[in-house]
Image 1: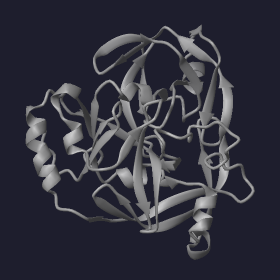
Image 2: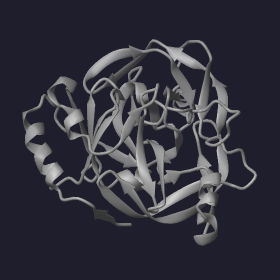
Image 3: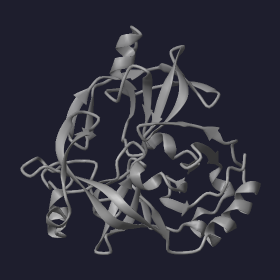
Image 4: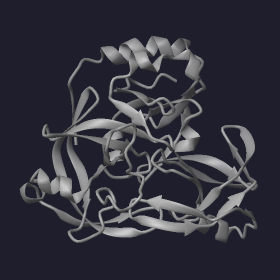
Length: 306
């Protein structure tokens, strides 16, 4: 895959001096686990990893981690969890001791989830991201937080964005120079785009491009899908080429386009959200995101600056 500049890097050069004077935390290195951002975290005194998932509407604790460490946690009320491939009732836990970024606190409404092996204990979703402006440097595997009052994101916003009720970032992208749609920027999506089958069919992509059978994994269930490569998408001031796209199999429940099902793809501020945009696209970029107010700057980072 490669990406093509549609504008110069002047936007990035304008931002860098501003960031140097802003109230920011030091850069924190993260690991990418199959495209997921992971950081070290301690849960109930046990060292593990946390996944940062901007597309998730919950904060979750991994059932495999709880079982492996024989944790006895205070149960909360059951929670209905909506995922890409279905909805399921899950147990929640309260007053769970967590230590992250050098801060210790107790978390409530941590929902039982299934997201990998026992070595990953925690998932932090959209509600975690809205406290600060997040700057995520994917090429250099690092992130930092910027105090909202110190940076005018309205001035430096360079992609159409909204923030849904759960705080997830929703951006407008153009697919194959044919169709503009709104997609959730999902740091928990390890692929490229997840779209409705109907959309791909209407644009003729399923006939035009070679498809392969794939298995998609959501927070609750797995599903069989068709996957193909889209020649180009426009993402902010850039174009990204050869992007992986996943759509449900013919005859499968298509939660993204089913008006009878309440899902995370409900209308957001009068725009219709059609799917997810994940790691296969955002891995190239430095993203500066104000999740709370729905503003984002997309740039290409220069060499690591410590």
